[in-house]
Image 1 (cartoon, rainbow, N blue to C red):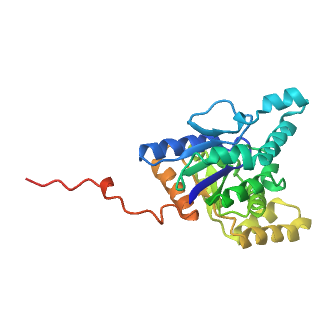
Image 2 (cartoon, rainbow, N blue to C red):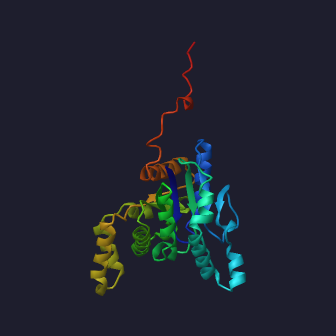
Image 3 (cartoon, one colour):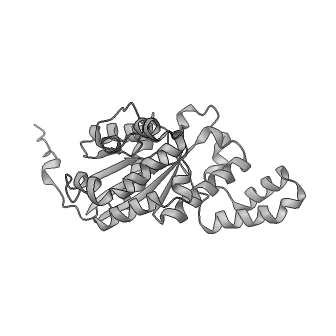
Length: 268
């Protein structure tokens, strides 16, 4: 059985930086993982690329040959990937062992996670290949400054969760850039009544019923829980990775490796 993270989220939320930091952390603790680039517009990487969609198709070529814009070109690239899941992608996937750990660095176009079926079909293909998959949704913590933006972020997370039907880990990224972390504490695991009260204060009275319905929806799906990620702290990366590993049951079937432990030294 293989294991995979699908790293998704809006453009600029820190997905590639997260993948790079995760790779460096795993390298430091001598744990093997492979990062896969699924963004046909990507140019520079801070990590070794195990698989690259640009070997199949690139955004620049599509825009030049078909006369499409950036968004239309990217959608064309992702649909082309979908058409080649049984060919190019399966051949690339066969290079990895049953217990390999893959991290997919995805594009930032939000429609890929909300209503276009490309990534859903991609996930189903991974499952057929005996992979346990977890969606890792990144939100930029610098924009979570008030309740309206928080609810908007929750709705985007919920849309992806419903579309992909995967175990979900929601991360507040770029915590190392937040100047006053106390402003975010109330949004990490907030009470529904607090959210509703804050939302009603900021919205006109005619939106009271809508506000109540939104808060109930967020609460019912348990989407009000986010894990803060500070890439400066190894403990933060380790905690996030542990939460994801738990979702995909990584390591549960692993045998104890005695050689990983040094024998105690005799005190003389």
